[in-house]
Amino acid sequence: MPNAFVVAGTQSGVGKTTLTLGLLAAFTRRGLRVSSCKIGPDFIDPGHHANITGRASPNLDGWMLSPEMNRLVFTKQAMDSDLVVIEGAMGLFDGAGSACEGSTAQMAKWLSLPVLLVVNARGLAQSAAAIVQGFCGFDPGLHVKWVVFNGIGSANHLRILQDSLTCLPQVTCLGGVSKKEDISLPQRHLGLVTAGDTSLNAQQIQSLAQLTEKSLNLDLLLRDIPTVSCGDLLSGTAVFGSRGRNGGVTIAVAKDNAFCFYYQENLELLQNAGAELVFFSPLKDERLPDNTCGIYIGGGYPELHAAELEGNAAIKTDIYNAFNAGMPIYAECGGFMYLCKAIESDGVAREMVGVYPFCTRMMHRFESLGYREVTLKADCLLGKAESRIRGHEFHYSRIEPEGVQKAVSECGMAQMYEVGNARMQYLGNEGFCIKNTLGSYIHLHFASNLKAAESFVQACKRFADRAGGWKGAVI
Image (cartoon, helix red, strand yellow):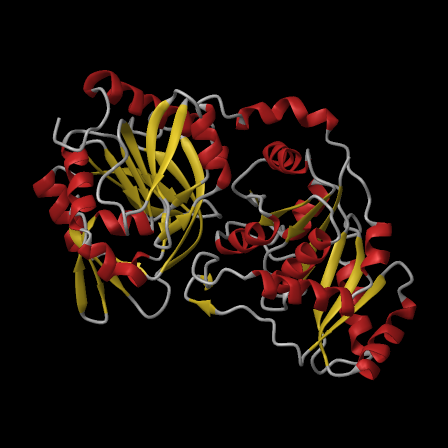
C-alpha cells in the first residue's frame, strides 16, 4: 500500500518538472522505493524521472486512455513502491477541452489523490492567496492539499506568501524555492532536452536532493501523504505482463539518442502479445539483430543526428532490404522521418532509408500539435478496418502534399488512417503504408486499443513462419 500524490502547476513553465525531479531525488536519497508517472503524452519528462529513480515512468492520460486503463497503469507502477510521485501537465485544469478532459485535475480525481500545487511567486505577495483559493475552489471534487512557491526573492518574501494563506487552513505551504537557485533544465523544440542528451550526473542529482530538502518541509509532506490500495486492480495488470520476453518472436526496437520516444506500455503490450524486444541503434549498429521478424522505430530527434544517420549506410541498407522482403515495420514521427528519402534542415538534405520516396523538411515552428484519434480505413499492421486507436502528434517537420500524391500514384502507397482531433473534427488521411511498412507522424498509445499490439506481433509471427527470421540479406 504505497503513498502517492500529484504535482501540479498553475500554468506551464512554473517548475513542475524540476520540483518533481527534486522530490524524486530527495526521497530516493532517504532510502524509499520511489517511482513516478507523467500525466499527458510527454516523452521527455519520464526519461528524466527514470534517470533518478532507475525505474521507467509511464504516461497517464485521460484523453488517450480510459479511467480503468489509467488505474491499471498506476497500479502496475505502484505495486512495489513506497511512494509514487505523479507529475502533471500544463496548468492543473488545462486539458483537451472545456470539460478538463485529459487534465491533471481529472487524473487526480480518477486516482483519488491529493495535489501539490506549484505557484510562480515572482511578483506576488498577498495576491498569492487569491490564486491558491481560486484553484482550491474551482472544482470541489479535487483536493489541493499543499502549496510550494517557486521563485521566491527572500526568506521575508516567503513569510509574506505563507501569511497570506492563513485564510486557507485546508492548504499547507511546504516552503519555497529561491529564484537564485539555477536548477532549470535546458530546452529545445518539443520540450526539454532528452535525458539521453543531458542525463543528470550523480553530483547534480545529489545537489537537487539537497536543495529540495533545504527548501521544503518534506517530513510534513511525507506525514500527510495518504496511502492507496492497489489490491482490487492487481489482476488487471496482467495485460502488461512479459510472457514474450523469452522465446517470443523478435522485434527490433530502435533505441538511442535519435530515437527514444516510446510509451512504456507500448513496449510491455508487445511483450505480452508474444514479442521478444531487442534494442538496436540506427546511429551505431551496422545491421539488425539476428532473427528479427519486425521493426519498431519510435520518435525522437533524428534531425539533430541526421549526419550520423546518413553516414551509417550499412544499417540503412539492412532496414531497406527488410522492407523489400516484406518484414513488418512500424514507425512513428521521428522514426517515420528516418524511413523517408531524406531529412532537410536549413537547406541541407541528409539521405535516410528511402522507404518513402519523399523528404521531410524541418520548419521553424511546430507544424502539428494535439491529440489524435485514428480510424483504420483497411486491415493493416495495427488491426482490422474500422478499429480506433488514440494518440498524440507534435512535430516541427512537414512533407509536401505533392510528394504524398506522387507516392500514392507511382509507388502504390496507401493512407491507412482517417484522422480526427480531440473534438472529433476530421483532419484528413494519414498512416502511410507501402508493402508491410506503416509510418505516421502520430504517436499511438497501444493501451487505447489492446488489439493494436497483438495485431503487430501476429504480423511479425507470420513473417517469421514464412521467412524464418532476418539474417541481414534479402529473403
